[in-house]
Amino acid sequence: MNTFFIDSLIGMFIFTQIFIYFNLIYYKKYGTIPNYLLNISYNSIYYYSKLELEFMKTTNNITKYIKTTPCLNNLLNYMNQNNDKNIYSYTNINDYLTICSKFNQEDNLDYKLILHYNPDYEKKMYIESLKVEQSDYKFIMTEITINNNNISIHFTSEKYNYLIVNNKFDKNFINYFLKTHYTDFVKDLSDSEIENYKIKIIDHNVNVVEFDNTKSLVINKTGYEIL
Image (tube, one colour):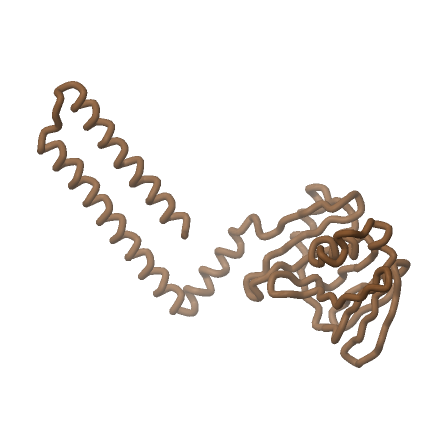
């Protein structure tokens, strides 16, 4: 339901309440409501609704025309992209970790930027001026082991993508990631238990890489690093 439709419903409700209010005043004063006043109320609401529907129909036809005309559609997308002030959102996890979400319209999911600090206003502005790139690299398998229990994890889904260039997966991030996306696996574990993990990766070259919480996984454009 778009904003215009909601505003129209609110406007129609207010418009109706005004006529009801004046009818009640007249009724209290004279004990009846004359037919002409009822007709005015009914016709006003009827023509207001009809005009509103015609306006919505015209708006929809214009929108359809724009979307079927390449140059106009590109201009509309450009304007929407530049007018969207809330495309970035920040979630402070602790003093050492903030997750910045940038909605990507083309992929229809959130690109997740891992910030290993809490950014102030100026740093947020700087972050939002940078180009956010997803990695071209995909893992065949990623498995995490905690207390001899294993689970396969995924850094991408239909809703989010953490495989963003320059993202660093350290123990603070892994703790957050598991608590957020694999709640059942860690619900009975303490922070110290969660952070005492081991990760095994099978990369696209079928290389098996293993590391623990003393190392960090850094995502590059065409690969990764273990630091």
